[in-house]
Amino acid sequence: MLSKLKIKYFSRFDVKLTVFYTFALLLISLVLSSFFYYRLQHSLLKQIDRMLIDEAKELILEIEADNHIVKGCNMFFEDISYRVFYPVFFRVMASDGISLYESENFSTILSKGIKQREHFTVTVDYRKKKRYRIYETRFTFKNKGPFVAQLAINTMRSDKILNTSLQNIFSAIPVVFLLSICCGMYISQKPRKILRNITAVTRKITSQNLVERLPLPPGQDEIRDLTITINFMLDNIESSFTEIRQFTADVSHELRNPLSAVKGEIEVAVSRKRDAADYRETLHNCLERIDDLIKMVNDLFLISRFDAKKYDLKLSRINLAGLLGEMHDFFLPMAQEKNIHFVIERCDTVFASVDRHKILQLLSNLMDNAVKFTPENESIILSLIEHSHEVELKVTDSGIGIPESDFENIFKRFYQVDPSRSGDDRGAGLGLHICKRIVDVHGGSISATRNKIKGTTLTVRLPLN
Image: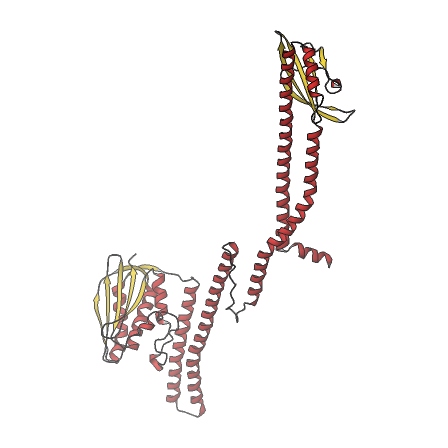
């Protein structure tokens, strides 16, 4: 149980972020401390080197002033003997290595040997456990030489400063470690709080509760962008669920009425004994309603294929004027029954690459609506006009027209301009929606406009290629 709690604790986002901040801050602190320690060491060493060079110049000047090597060395020794910090030890030798003058205890500092050029070196007196920085240079005196001057300074003071700095660095590491943990926990609380809020709100979201939205954080950062993206996704989900509910309700409503009518007619037919003509009429009415149901189911199936982008366009070079003439001849008897003047005003011979079956369905839906919703003794005018890159099909009726407020909705599924219609004049509200989907997959457009006098004009534009 304890191990599971440990695993759960260390898998938390804020703990991981704190660990990351801690190691990052410690690493930066170690790098900076190492850099400053190296710079301090280098600065102290350069300071000692400058002192040794200056002292070597003073020694040579004393020798030249006294015009004697030993006297000059004695005078220089008297000058430096009173120093408390950075005491100087020195030796003057001939070029063959014979010592001409040597300050006290210098032999314990540097072994014999002369380099061929000016240089610095470090040596250790293990008996006294002291380190020395040594500078060796050459000079001439009375046109003789070269002579060698070796000067040494005890680095104990600079070493003490370095040791103190190193101790301070090691002492500061635990403090930095604790501060990094505290800062990491404090900094990680904000994103953890936001993420917990996101989790809490999203857990409340169900198919019955899609109005919840995440509050936007105040900062302009990635968390805010994530919140906006999630809210946008929730908007799309809510819109989709609303469409699904509306679609389900509309389908249920559209299926219930014809099924209830079929059931009612059958119940009336079997309520008492009837002759063959009555049964035949009942069956005929039921078949008509079942045909309507099958047409609506087929329309819904076609729409679902459009939604899933699983439609197959069987394109071929078709004479659209021929298709328009066929559909006009098919609907002409229905129009004549209502004494509607149904004519083709203009019909250009236009060839286009289209799906014959879907274009026939497009023309059928447009003409069926026109005939169905145009009153008696009115007119329907068709036209097919070829333009440079497209073909324009117009279906103009002189019916009651469509209110301006309904134009933006007439191509939505199950939308009906006058839902109070009943009987044969009442459709399922799928015809114009299917027309739009057919036109869209052909790369065209469809629109509706109100005529100046009365009625409506539906305009379809299809690309020639």
